[in-house]
Length: 222
Ligand SMILES: *Cc1c(COP(=O)(O)O)cnc(C)c1O
Image (cartoon, rainbow, N blue to C red; front, side, top):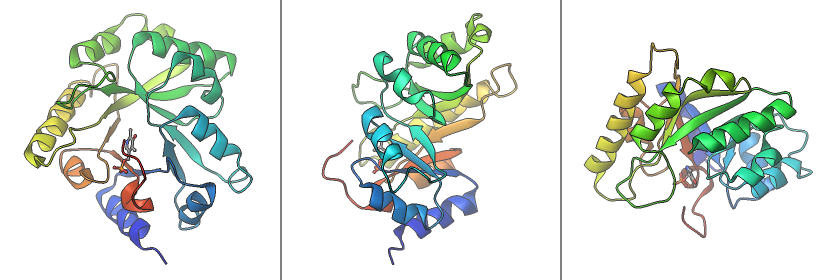
């Protein structure tokens, strides 16, 4: 039996952090094998892949909490809002409003995280700290009755320099802490992947997103 899942699982349990098994590129059968070892939370980075696996015959009847961890386009919001448990990568006020609109139609309260751009690399995705602060302080936020911002998500730089990675996580945690005890009441800090989850947990992560350390290498990178 493959023990990589149980190792990661035990580690997360010991540290009290939530484990999201990132199953992108993996088959429904591969997910089922991990499900059968006790995993209930699975995350995908693409809407279509997520919806497809959820409806696949081997997984359709299973009690899985599905998370979307990748970039979400406005026109795909309606495809996942009816069932998704957590959306990790809200990166604009406009997208937040769209999720609220579709959640209202679906008569749901949808939990989301704001993705903060913490890496040194140039990517299109993620909010700056200033932008996140604006969203969290927006007086219209309370009008979005069908979304709830549970916390923040960040992806550290892809680098060998683990001090850099640690600093990025630390800064995100510091920002997160500023909103503890305010009306925003953030509770979930999603940070840490296969290559850096131990550091993320040391720096205060409450939720890790782990793919290759559970399922093995993918044939493409993030
Ligand atoms: C792929 C992915 C992960 C998991 O990556 P691994 O390095 O395989 O653990 C985590 N978060 C996001 C947003 C991803 O796209």
